[in-house]
Image (cartoon, rainbow, N blue to C red; front, side):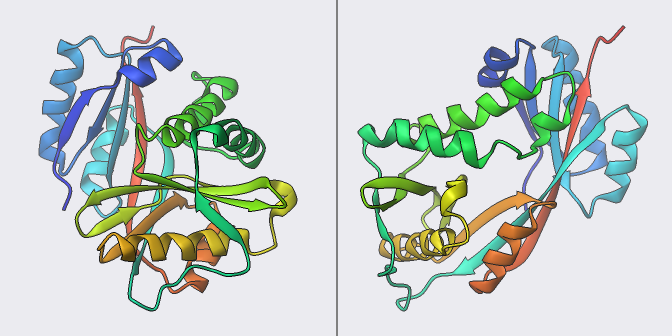
Length: 243
């Protein structure tokens, strides 16, 4: 179970221009600790996540002017020796020179996507979209990813999936994208299968991935591969010192 935690987010402060903090609240009683931290650090925006089953905490957040921005669903797959690399699609580890291709895929694949950033009108859609471009760039440079698998067709990049080792037993796929022109061809499914294989090669037991509750296409894809829904989180935003 996740424990209560909170810290300043320099990346989001730099991106949006507001002093920002991130928090996870395990239970209602911890909310005062988080609010005290925000007051002490003069936080403008707090991004807080909590388990969807914590209804008493959710009600407390609503009373304190937190606004619900999204719901994340987490899926899990148990890897095995039977997870092999797909043969239909050319998939390999991304190289530094692939960064521009990853950015182009991200720009088009997420053009209509709505995250908790996009749901907050004070952050602006353009800057919210830039968050995904930065995510892809830092993943390719291995700053926030252990590996990035890239799918190519006739030498052109058409999709990618970033991979991160959460611990010895678990690998997560934080960012999955397929070019719009290549969607519907099984590229996403092959990238997922390649991720299962990579996880097995790294000695992990589980592979996990998450998405917005509204992203039905990804959820249908993952369940078709045998993944199971096991976890869900709410994302709330709270603005302080509003006039």
